Image (cartoon, rainbow over all chains, first blue to last red; front, side, top):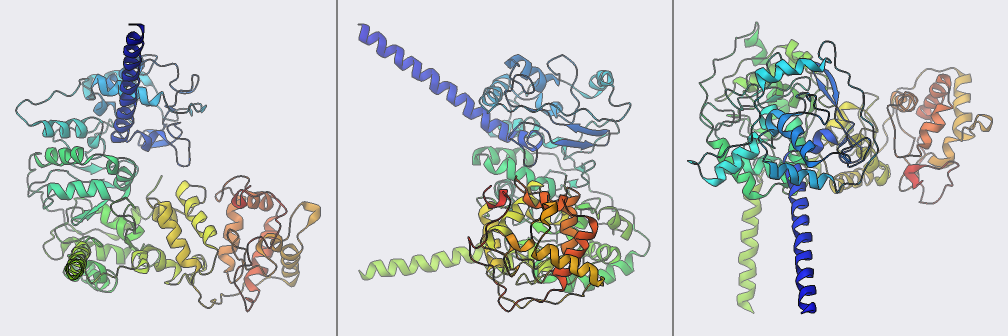
Length: 404
Length: 233
């Protein structure tokens, strides 16, 4: 009998340990889905020890230490404290966090998922790294201003499943609206720094970083017009698809987050994006002075510098070089991404699905502002593309290389 | 036996079709094609650009080149355009790219010689070949090899590089925009140099003829006078 008891006890013990391991493992996965490392791990820094400074139009905000160090990290935090941070955007002392921390999205995360992430963070090696001082500009550094901001722009609330939709759609919506915090970049921010949510994921310029995060709807007028759900999954998994390549901040998201997600979760994300409403057709942008000459010159530059890879017909070459014709990134309202791609070139992210990516030369040292404006304007108006021309002044504005 | 062969042949054909659809057949499946972002500034064989700043990569030791890409990626070495290129590359891919450039054998280009006084040139030569023990400055040759062609596998050659590139690198150690793993012995050495020393060394190195055999010296052929993180600490 005693043997039996001991055996039962041992079994229970093992189950508890296995269960705890499961939670930690789930927490690790969820933290990856939330791309926490992108802000909380500094470049060349210790994992999750904070220290990366997030540039915002209101001043730089340093990301805090999430390792379980008692003094400088979250070692003294309880699971409730952690839930309050994600769900309500409040620090341990009850003061509001700034929305550079995307609690506007993380509020959708369930309590169980918050607890799993917290359990996983607690297993990380503790790193002693004190928080950097807040360097927000006046008046934004007055934290009490967050009170009225929250009243106007923030509704706390976990994700509520839509019973009329299948489970995979709900899973996709939960990931996109919550942990994925996609709308923090793929939306315009108003002058108070709050991301616009109506319409949702409708695209916008990422402040300070100056990349255009496109509209993510997949209808005929959408930012992902012409993409299939499989294309979306492939891009998130490998960093490129036959429709386009992840550039700039999205390449970073693929590297640190989406390539590690399960096929089921990626398919769920695609299912949800597919259901986003189709926006109104976009009005063509205003024509700029001298656009005709720019485009005519740009055609020559395209033939000399671009056509060998992207094709005279702008259709690209297989998986190596993305198409430029009917590519909504090319025709985005601003032209920023094409200008940056031409100036800085770069590799697609090196992922398990694309370990030796092809690349595009940077042209910043070879082409002047007029030439870049010409070739970008040509690309935006060639074949079936019908977007506005960009000016040499636009090019000059984005000549600084993207980065931190 | 024959059926197995036939089966293998069918599989081989099918796998060819598979790879042909994955990537357009007109795109060469070569490393050189893949790294157009590198070769457009550094040359197809890593011979270096002609603007005085894009350095030659051909023949530099592979571990050195891979380390530089890592350092750009980690923000230890700064040049925004390079940081952008390597930002999302994996270590195995960077290693493969480094090995490609390390294996290239192409003639050295000549660069316009800077105009410096004879006195400055003599000072540069003295520092490069003998150092200045009184100020704790070792000779460049003490680490970069008796011919200054580098030492396998981690130490780069200093021959055939343009003045602008050399002085920019020494300057960036001084202004804390170029780092590497600790202990960063080059940072220590450069902190002991004056501005005039940097110009003098860069000018002497840039005007020195490239030796007939410009290959890096074999591993272990120098005993560095300082502890260096890049050499294993």
